[in-house]
Image 1 (spheres, one colour):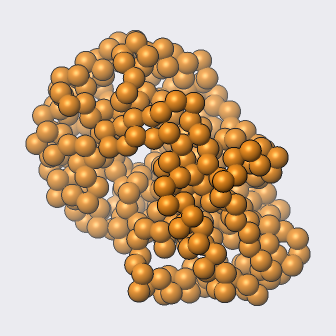
Image 2 (image 1 turned 90 degrees about the vertical axis):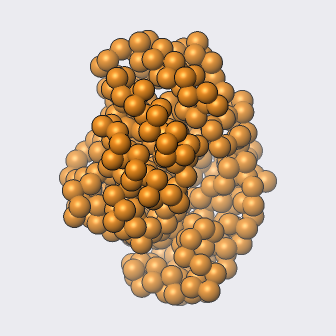
Length: 360
């Protein structure tokens, strides 16, 4: 089997209404959908995204620029292809658009390998579980008032969720405390609740807020300070009793190693697009395991399930419904868990008819 070609489609998925965090104003996500073709008719699929479709065509061009590194190669030689592209991007950098393109290619290649073996990837990697805990992440935004938060939280519970994430980062920290207090009171103590500050605060601000929030039994406090401030992360972590989660904005095992060495967080949150694809995600999970650290994957719900099913220290997966329209197969949440798909490869395939209406 050899790689015979690749195609990309650029789309934009609009949100029903604008979404706001402490640092984002979002109306849509733009995606590049990648299909890698082989001479045996087996294809691999994956995607990347950019908020509001900003510079999404630059991502598309970056992926297509690696075509010479793929055509004529055996798709099973994933590590060789990964390293070849890694060396190629040295002059342009090992973070950002370059790694996002590499990640998307790597994930599509694994999809081919799984399909060729007629095995779901978690079994190919070495399965450790058949289902994984998830948390609702497609709501509870900063722009919503408390009544809206409570209403949406009850919708999540009706959908089968037993864990959910609230965005914080209000101008007045007392407003954040009240939001958490009211939501915790509405959902009860048996439902897991985590809070995401989206990098909005300084270490002193995060510590002040965190101490106020400790009584509400948060599962974790996420990205309390800017992602690049590893010292600040560590200061917050040492000052608070609650776990600190972070890492979605870091790139590859090298970025995660820096977080670990800085003692920046208790839970690492690798993002499939930034981390370097499924190959690098597995390396990061094992690196974290060597330090007795858990991981919880960021977004990319459908394509991260194979990691969750094959990595013992993966404690949960983020349920983000933004990308569900892209796929023929749908995810269901039962008692807070998602089943790891038993379909070959990644287990999710693009719905070509649905995608047509989102094409840019």
